[in-house]
Length: 544
Image (tube, helix red, strand yellow):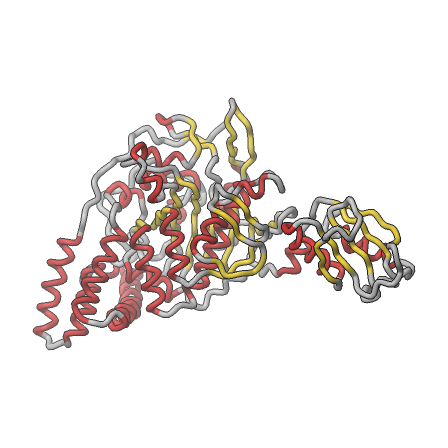
């Protein structure tokens, strides 16, 4: 049975309210006070930017994250790992003692000093003065455009910047091309990708769980729906509510990005470095991306994140592979951001401001990036996908949630552990579907791969046991093999022969498994009916 939630009220659709007028007035008053104290113009401009972006010194502890109005709507979770347990574990909750709260205020003050330093540096990088102040306020306004009361009510406060928190990442199919089409104007779009992230700035780790877009959820008066329909029904606010109830955890921040923005963010970073497991030639995703380790630009990264038809013929798991690639790209972006200087970070924020909607402030983004510096992405970036089973019901494909496995995954995630108990690697492609907190090197991936196809292994030296040894190495990759003798015993170098250009990567993989050899594309000189031909040469040490 689909999971049912109390979503019988229609989500509020209010116009976004703008705090800029309040902030401008507040900032002007603060600037007057500073000038009376004799502070320099540059210091004043930087601090004015601080006030305009998240309030005065006295209010920074709460405004830096966000000030909510009203109680959170929707049904509350009674899960053991839900909001109540989360709140009780938070030493900075409203229920904390006065003594504890005093300690928190001291920590907030120290953290504010660090953020202030970042903003002052940012103002200097941008040239200082009022122009930098105005530029930052403009970016902030763009980032927060569309963050309305309904969204803020759906989110849950984080009482301290360094506490672990949950964030919802939404990629929508509302690209500029689609938005300009008259039939879609003014619409909320379905989410093309949906990820729940837990970020721990103190321990410097990040866990991301992809939510399959076809996951079945009972949305009350809206009926049984796929989870990605929540955005089309009630926008970001309703999506936050649905995911929060499904996961049983409070969501404190969110970011919504369309496809055009994704491309520009990657370009602002100067590209990202990834190892593409499978060659992509998918017009529906936008084009071609070669396999292998490389630096992708924004267009190529977008193709990698969009493509699912590439994998349908390989393993029939297009959505799973696409979600895994999206997590791979996010990890690559995170790595690049954490290695960037302030100027590059601001270029990234500028790109984000055009295409991303988030409740985060610019100082909070920079502060979080600063807190996460030194993070080991090999061991402290955890990934997984919600456990589901595909079912075809009444002509529609659904992903049915495995409730016990899902609760166990969220319990691990909420306690700071990797969501997946162990790493999971797709045997057909070598794509990492889940990471369990241990570094996954190329050898681990290669040993997990089980290819389909056929390979003819031929003894090219006449030495006893050579072909059998080569056969063992090739079959370890998953291929079916046939063994025999070559047309000659005078081969000095092992040859791995393939027919089509798209097979080159796999021929190289066979060569690596053998430990030697030359990869050759057949031009008609070789006679074989299998997918690949291996002829062992004198360089192959096959004797026992």
